[in-house]
Amino acid sequence: MKLRSMTLEEAEALPRWRRPESLLFLMAFAMPIAFATWSALLNNFVIEAAGFTGVEIGWLHTVREIPGFLAIGVILLILFLREQVLGLGALLLLGLSTAVTAWFPSFGGMLLVTLLSSIGFHYFETVNQSLQLQWVEKKRAPQVLGWIVGVGSGASLLSYGAIVAFWDVLGLTYNIVYLVSGGITAAIAVFCFFAYPQFESPHPQNKRMVLRRRYWLFYALQFMAGARRQIFVVFAGFMMVERFGMKVSEMTMLLLVNYVLQMVAAPVMGRALGRYGERNVMAFEYVGLTLVFLAYGGLYWFGWGIVIAGALYICDQMFFALSFALKTYFQKIADPADIAPTAAVAFTINHIAAVFLPAALGYMWAQSPDWVFLLGAGMALVALALALMIPRHPEPGYETVFGSWRARGAPAE
Image 1 (cartoon, rainbow, N blue to C red):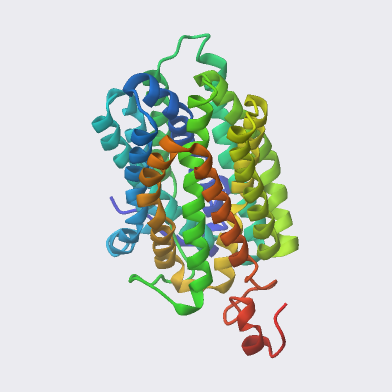
Image 2: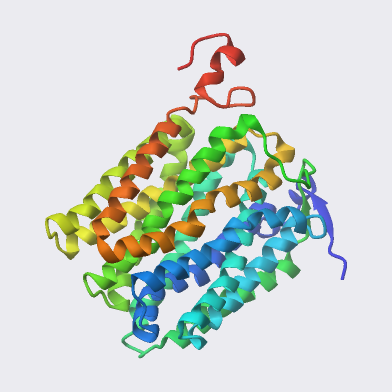
């Protein structure tokens, strides 16, 4: 079957629901239906059904991050597949893998199904980020990316709300919830494949690995983002279940509150990004994360209760919602033909620490959980130092404050 292709200009004549931005919004909605459900149930499922400890959860997340480290393989795949087709295929794999998660309640089984779903998630995210930066104009990017984050938060909100509302009332099981959520994501992926034409990006993409010295700050920020993200993704939720004994409905309610706030705040964050710039927004994010990680340590030092822990968890998630500032920074400094290959390279760099850090920190967690969060605070401070190197108005030739004299003939800001 040959799919129709059209340029972004030609797509303007289509009904609004069939335009490129609408496809981005629909994909942004579909992915969290599966992934958010998987994440919401994971800690309870592995503890109750598979008897996981901090060591096993660390290894599970290490395996989950391997496909992210290998995201550079997207460059090879786009030699043969359109990015749009590859992205939807990865979304389909994520949905199908999530659907069968409860069929494998063992350490080995969870590693296998997690690996498959992770391939779908990471390859989808790599391509999706590339398409966002190619299809959305630079001037509109902060606002549109804020809307996209809001749509994703709304999908997560829908997933969590359904779990909270019906888990106890209907006596739902892990198998039913995983089957329904994964099936919805897979169905949306199939719909998008047939309902939308193939959109041609305005700039043909380099189909080889791209590593440019002038992107060094972007690479460093990606590495630190991947490293400190593991502290939250792997251990913050695990702590809520292990230390405070939160049930599925309670953990999901916490996530529900978070995504209500994110859905409202993300468009506002997008406007703030357009007004204050990437440097200021990212500096605010990393200062906030440093304080949150230190406060996580306080849960163990001072014996703070579940209310403070829940508030910190929500704050942690809210700061991560600002991560799209790194996308717009790269969009401003990049050669347009570098977006697809650099998205793949960036995902690999982002996951270098993710491959070994969860397993290593699992052993640290077993000895002293507070040290894990202290390490996270240190990572956030390093990321803050890097963010302060971003100029107020980044552009090609002016990627860092150190390039200001050469690019502008004036001292750095």
